[in-house]
Length: 400
Image (cartoon, rainbow, N blue to C red; front, top):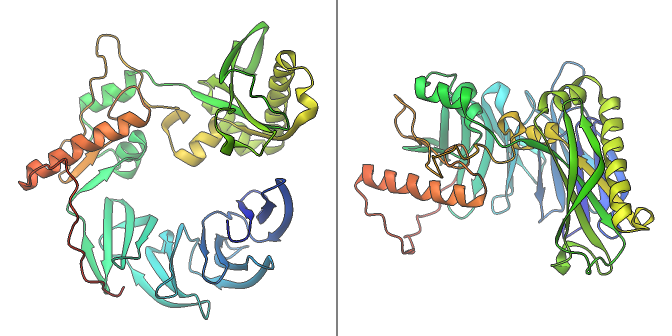
């Protein structure tokens, strides 16, 4: 947070809110909460941080209110079940919380730090994502059952005419939609088509000016590096972020090492069932990578200030990508970049975009498939598809 010059991290495993200073990056404080600490929203006007935590019999669900100026807990607002998303409206001094298991959202007065209203959702459930449009005073609630986007204004529910899914393809089709719209073509794609692998990434903060290093370098190994029981690598790729001064403070360099693996189940099981072993395994991989980097840059080990290791379990946890894939579908031989269908048989008003529609992954797949989806909507609604941006007439603001 710029206003406090601090970084706040919700740690669900340790059941606490951790506070770090930016320069140097160091733990400066922590506040003990309950398990499943995750969603947060910052009220910049009052320098308050709202944090969702708890949600079982031993630790009832609450929304913590933290004074970021003094790093103190000032309130703990009880809610029915764990809050899945939080948003803030500085104009009306309100916060909104998606309470998915109770199929509702709550309105919190930021002044009194109390819940002033509950709103039950009746036409859809599993309301997890939440967004607030302050300019137009619209609250957007995304539901998973069925896949629906609801806009709320002045106490009324406005159902979306179209839903565009940029989420994970497998989760969308087989989980959120319950497999109701699967045909033989979809089954064949998800059963047979090749995926990009998942990966581990070792990220290093090095207190050295490595501007003489290339932006990318590959190190051939004299003996394979064992990543997990099914993965051995005979080379490693390093990236030196020395081409932009904003990546690290003066005289320092951010360095990453990318280690592909398809053994995502190993890392998921390790994190879920053997957390100590999971941390030990990450540490072992990091040490092996640092040893290899030391051979290229003697003395680098003693200059390393920050080490962070992500795994396929991290990818799945934070992106939801099926099997932890880095970029979805591989390009099939002879098929080039031919996109997959962006519709599902029998489901109207629904389109898919992103790497699960366009093989090859990357940012371009999102842009290209989004354009195709918008053209389809315009054609269906008989609206010209205009490539030139025009300023829309601003609607009158309404109260939520």
